[in-house]
Image (cartoon, rainbow, N blue to C red; front, side, top):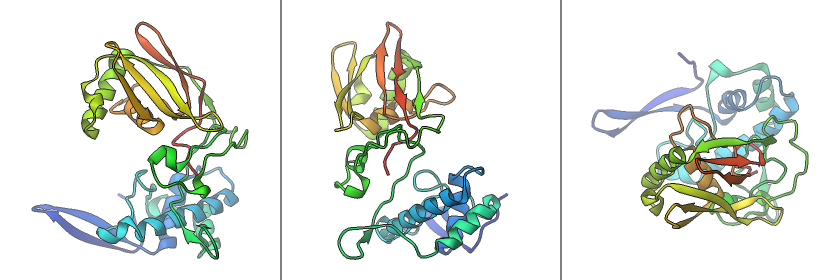
Length: 264
């Protein structure tokens, strides 16, 4: 039920199955991205800033991981949400056209484009791509104390969020099985504690302890993903920027800040 610019290409991937590719120029693509990633009421200048970040991200992916596969980016939050012409707005078209050819670079001279991560709200302190995704350290994606710059977000502060220990254990064990790590064999979760923080105080690693005293150390984003894995309509944590309180039956996520991975 959606309309798209450009052309479609069908790529066989196995007997009886194929991927559907939308071949489209970068700025036509961005017009469908900006409307999906931004709220309609936001100012057109915010759309223009997002257009530059989104353009850089897409071109970086196309020239790195996209080189060895039949597509450049996915149309979901795995890369950037893209909904084609159907979602386009006057603001998304204006922002893509007004910033045509503009990208972000880092390094000496004219620099090089990089993987320009973005998230909804950092909660006052951003996470580095190194700590979030175990990628090589990049000064442009370093942790920063942004203070109250994003405090208009409804997720700047959040909590408490309460999840039953048996449900949290189920989620984390299924996550561990999917990732092929030792968490799959974990007994019931007893507590989750902050293990390390970055220089501004945002957690970068957590220590998960089960009822048998076995401990598992997880990165901040691993912890968030594990806590939210196959959550369905149940409660979820909005970011990995939180503290916890353990009760006999539940884990309470308190003093939460931000929405998303907080990088960028």
